[in-house]
Length: 185
Image 1: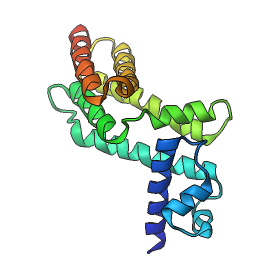
Image 2 (image 1 turned 90 degrees about the horizontal axis):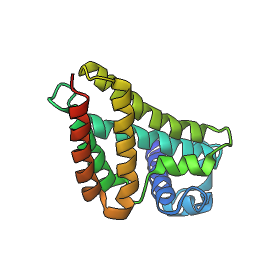
Image 3 (image 1 turned 60 degrees about the vertical axis):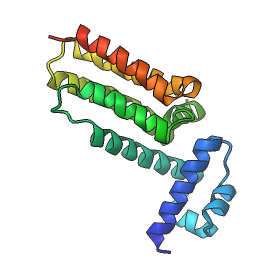
């Protein structure tokens, strides 16, 4: 197995374990064992568990945005609804047990670390994404719309653990449609 293949396997295993058991509930020994790699392989790529968590979050964020971008056509009639639908699909396929970024914020809050910065940055990027989209589409009060849609997606994420991704997304689409009517020029 090549060096990059081992690193990829390590990252996938770490992400799965962190997602299933939380960042604090998983030790490096468990990750090494389940990834079936040597201890030195881990340390050749990451100097600490925190560095591993940082990379897991960065890769997950990159996958999230690639996923969203593949579904949302900015030039379509309603990219906002497409974004809500795409987020719902992501929740169903990748985030059915809650939000990994929110967990990172909770677990690493106030520690002045890169992990919390990456997780918070993901949330701010979503807000900026909707604000830019609202500006491009000439929506009234684009900052308010961006905040409302971001809050809507965050609520969808939270409700997924209670009512499932499909139902939460269904409600979110309906709410997004109402918001968009209110923000039409």
